[in-house]
Image 1 (cartoon, rainbow over the protein chains, first blue to last red):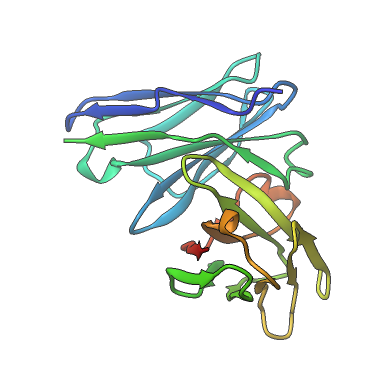
Image 2: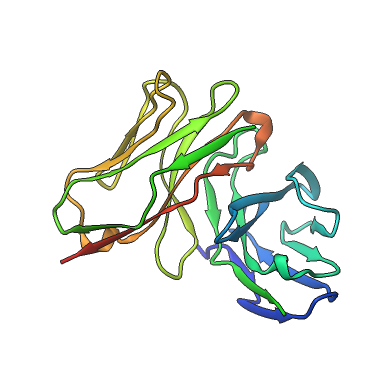
Length: 115
Length: 114
């Protein structure tokens, strides 16, 4: 069974641009969540999608958004990039519903650098 | 708010040494607790979990016991191997409505030398 796939693996953008990251969950998983990982703040929850609906949201500004498609694939978008958005963005998929989703499977992440 | 604090790293051990990585948490209520591991170049993987006080999670020789009285979930292994070299994250999940929202500790880098 293929794992969680994130594309691209690396991205370099400049301030003010926008970026879209993609995540394909494990086949059969309907829940996708996104995390930001930085050396200073560690792992921070961005949002979670289940059945194409956002179910939970972390404390990030509105520049960070996401969506989920009917095949459970998800994208996250960051608009008006800032230097502080440089981070590893991790996607995780879960087999259960929002209530039962305790075991997460993480992808290897997309490393975003904002210059 | 909820938070997780892990012992400062990095930790360097010789093969077959005993491992302890401390984890304490602050939460309103009774969270589920987790240890995730991140091997070089890979995504995080669930190592073990415990969902209520006094539960012991175990996997691959690693153990952790949910201690409500000390709000702790320390990770232990009796004899580490070189292949255990990785970053270890302690995490909590507050309730069913939290879904995939985990609060992670800072992570502890473990290096095991032969």
